[in-house]
Image: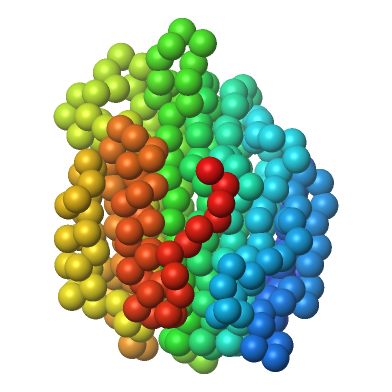
Length: 298
């Protein structure tokens, strides 16, 4: 994929998809104004929209909740999300409930997301879990452009859905591709390319060759100039209190900015949620002076 710099606003980030019809589109432009972040542009159509903005604390960070009134992604569905957080603005983007992928006969369901962060911009992505049901195939392509002083925290969990015969983990495949480019003011440079492909086996879903015997995957992606090996070690230490198998890696450093990828395997959505929350709580307190995230959805 190209790492060419994107345009100034969400409407210019990417052309409409020509290969399949869009079932939903959301565009947000977040701007800082008088100490608070607001949506200076907001557009939605089809089966994507956001609830009214709210503020969880006194930091000025605005929280938007993404809603899919259709309830689930189906075969050949395409959803497009375009978000730009301008210089100094702060956004928390979450979902109202889990993203469910049902049977996708004929073609996979897809989500394309493009995120752009300005100088000193802060973005937290905290969606509920992605649930893939029997015979589901899903692709998620995320393209992120950050500045050297941007701050990004992105956490997500992939979990199998229940099938009518009582078995779990029988979906076809889940592909998550995340590309991060750093724009230092000249030509953007590739900071990280993270590919996750899960193809469950109908015959052996617990063998050592398949996710080390686990069924759920949790991921934490962090990009910030304060990321270093000491932080990676500290976050990895936090995960030892949880029933999960976890690894942490760092990207190369570009223009003083480093990325961190934490991946955890478990058999419990709730265990992964607690693990990722422990990590994000540490970052929120240390970097932003904010309390633990409480979305009051459970």
